[in-house]
Length: 350
Image (cartoon, rainbow, N blue to C red; front, side, top):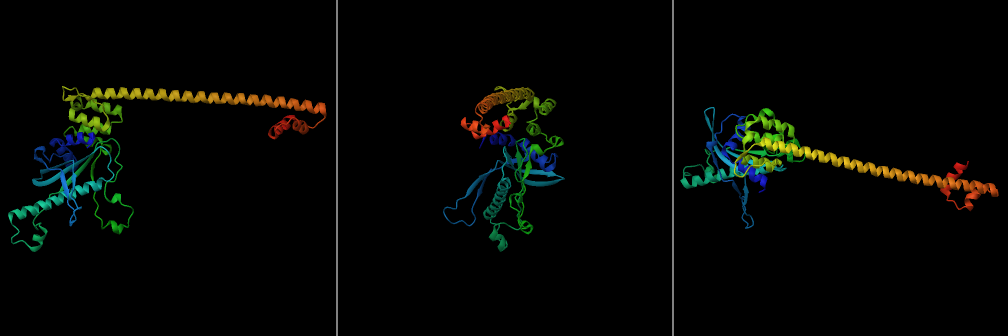
């Protein structure tokens, strides 16, 4: 697991942040999921090859980033859910498949648990034959699994958002028979200003900073106006430093820092880079101009030498024709002048 994955998972594992992400994504900011209603689950899923009897058919273990169970209350109704977060510092071009497999394994685990529970309690007695064979009773129910992918980068997500987007062009009748699976994606680039106000934790500041990470002027104003940025915690700083190279420092004996100072430093570095780039461009342009001038001078010198040679040859041909009575062609042949130069001289002597 890379540094980016480690710091983002550590940050998202906090129950208040985890609940905030789903309250925003599912309930549009309404505080339905309480942090203390969350219970973290084992992130390991075992994929057992059904029907495998050969020794090489080994179970495959897959690990999710974070998964928690929750009891959410809304409109006086109780909702039992399983919520999972996949943290992505980079685009995963097979994310629909990755999440679909994880969700399917979670549903398979629920079925296996239900079957094991019935066997332990012995309540198969009196059950229908089909219930006994399947191990899953007619009255049993699954808990919905909602997986949210959070993309910690300022660039647009250009990967597929569904299984159907990963297929080649197909007959529409085929697509109708292939269930689609869409990923739930939270990406700062696609969020609007009003969206950030729906968060209750520092997830607001984290995602805002990432969205405007490449616009130092705008980011500076946002950081200055948001009081939370004036005392941002070490965990949040780790996320920003790892994901967008913020270069924010936190003193060893402190747990928070003022991001405004870091932004000013980033602006100065950006200005220095701009000056350095301008100087490099100017130096490159000067070298190019000097080279062009040198080439032009060499060309002019060469042209002057050629012109002087042609004039000398023309004078010699003229003198020879006058003294011998030869034609221009005879004179040039006797002087062993090349054919291409003879053509030039003939035009000059015409």
